Length: 302
Image (tube, rainbow, N blue to C red; front, side, top):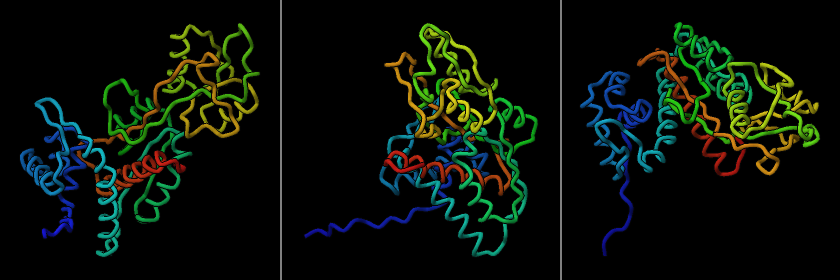
């Protein structure tokens, strides 16, 4: 009788690191630059990993490299393996990671999703000087171009150019304190962040397309200020579902509000290669947000 015991496979972390680099760069040559290897060497590593797992991880053609369904499933686990590997090696070698990392993020996302992640990173690498800047996406991209940031999370248009690595997506919804803030035949009062806010642009563009009149009733650069205005009944706004408090009412199409595109956050880098401390933070964020996304899909809190 044949032995039906499954074959034990030990994943090679060098191959896993190459897989993550290609998945993020969407290109073998750019991944090779990041890893310090040639394009052909990276391609060989990916073929070896595919042989190990018995699945095709990328769909390749002359113009693009795209993850297959199996590759999408492997990516969050691969990032988590790299994060664990880096932490274990750092502890065993007793060589504390040092340096400075300049990181930027939108204020609303930073205050709701990042405190735990950045706190974990600071505790794991206490000798790294972490500097965090909260600002609007366009301002963060300007700072990146000026060389003032190493890494940044930005709000990305889902139908726009593929800037950075997508790390988080969530439905964008309309919320308000109640329908009594909406007066018949009057413009919709909006609670918004000042320009250049991606969600502000999406809200006003969607209302214009639906031929709904609107006016700006309250402007605040902080999520806390916007939520206070919403609770006071000053208007409505567009927020990612995970940022909408339970005490606010979701306003749907049945109330005349147009459907909004998903909110998407991407991680961008200052260059093809980063200092080790910045690369570790990138892995930390990507691994943590990957796991948060999986937990959210399972119905648990983000």
